[in-house]
View 1 (cartoon, one colour):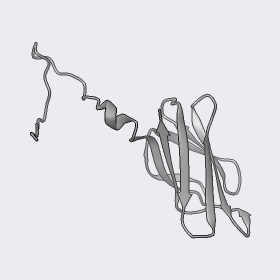
View 2 (tube, one colour; view 1 turned 180 degrees about the vertical axis):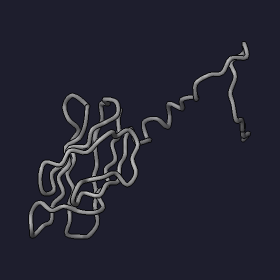
View 3 (cartoon, one colour; view 1 turned 45 degrees about the vertical axis):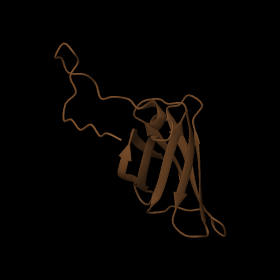
View 4 (spheres, helix red, strand yellow; view 1 turned 90 degrees about the vertical axis):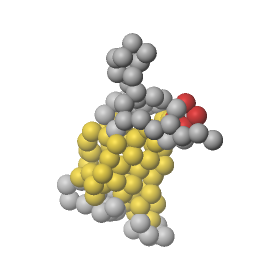
Length: 119
């Protein structure tokens, strides 16, 4: 197998091109991801394709996409008695996120992670 390494790809006329798309990988890569602190005023610790967080109360957030996408979601946060539920809005502009404790109901958490995968 050969490996091609380049810092810049050029079109045959010498002009620069956009980064190549690898369709086989696109379906396996997250369309958006975020890790945020959901306590106090929620804030991103790190993110890709998210622009903001709206806090709707204890353990209830909307994370807004930078650009709308059609996708599925997954969500996780620490501890074996904790759950995180996420669903992408019908218009693809964001995702509703709810963080729960099995015994206490909705709770804020300092380490909420969400991954969004598309088709």
